[in-house]
Amino acid sequence: MWSEFTEALRAQLSNQLVAGAIALGLIGVAAAALRKVPGAIWSQLKRAFVITASLDSRNDLFAAFVAWLDDQRFGQRSRWFTVVQAPPGIAEDDADTDDVPALQYSPAPGFHLFLYRGRLMWIQREIAMNLQVVETVHLGALFASRRLMEELMEGVVRHAGARRAHRLALYTMDRWGEQWHLADTKPRRSLDSVVLDEGVARRLHDDVHEFFDRRDWYARLGIPWRRGYLLYGPPGTGKTSVAYALAGELRLKLCTLSLTNPKLNDHTLADLLQRTPPRSLILIEDIDAFFHARDKQDARIEVSFSGLLNALDGVAAQEGRIVVLTTNHRERLDAALIRPGRIDVEVELGNATASQLEGLLLRFHPEAGERAARLAHEYPSRSLSPAQIQQILIAADSVDEAETMLRGAWQGTT
Image (cartoon, rainbow, N blue to C red; front, top):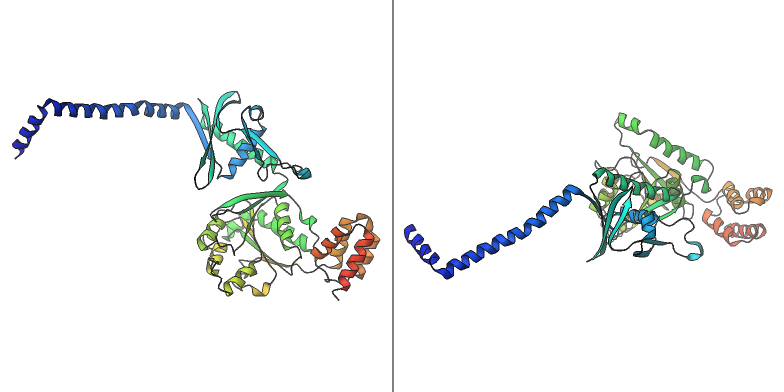
């Protein structure tokens, strides 16, 4: 059988036409393989002599890198550049003067050469459009060490940090519910900027500072290094303002989250709370709305109560974070949520006291002096919320008008 097969093959090969076709096929295969050799060699040579770093617009570092480019001499002198409105945190504090948006100029998509620390480098900027627009930057240098590129990127981060030194970075969940996204930056404010009932600001200030100072103590005792706060009270009493001020006071990033967001489920919630940016305050506002929606069996709410508890203090919960919950209705909250260990400090923020009214009036009218003290003495404590008082003071053009409006407001509540 085998001899018959070899005889048939020998007969076919003796046919010049068949032999020529096989030879041509072998030559084609060899040529195709050889064509790839120069590319493979070039690819290996590039890896040996060229260092390349790539980043794309899905990463918050991308905006920081473009801002860094904008401030470099070669970025400012580029004759082929793109113009965009500056993203959050890049514009200076006065960029929105007269409602004029801050603009950002940087080398346009394409290939650009530049010098950095006396070394020739280049940028290849590309834009791809599929389900979303993704812009990619490849940063390259010839005969450079990886450390040079790492130092450049570390400089980009420091540059972004210097721009945001006096601003609060505000993160929200992205549109897919998968990761944190830098949504905006705001001027930092301290706890002193929020007129609170006597002793409340100091209590919060001291507690949070003590928490960050006692990391080793937590580790030594094997206690999870986490802190939870519950701010509760009627609307307009400053719960959100306190959270913002706490983050500003401690130079923390502020991550805001709504449990009624239909993009959230148990898995994405746990993942988000495990991957918050370093030194973050997580603000979950109006948490009673979650319980209200759950009681109504709202089909859009995919977060379960057990999923919420596990995300807050499960085995995989992130260390070194602060969680602030706010609610207008503490009585609606499940006892398991606000037990010690999940909520360490509860602060009730009620309607304004006499000292708060006096403080707010002096903030708007520092010259009021004794008049503010007299008005505060006559004010029925807890009659108005801080938000109501502030709204009146914004609307009033003078101390006289403010006093008249304040009296009318609190008399209308009695």
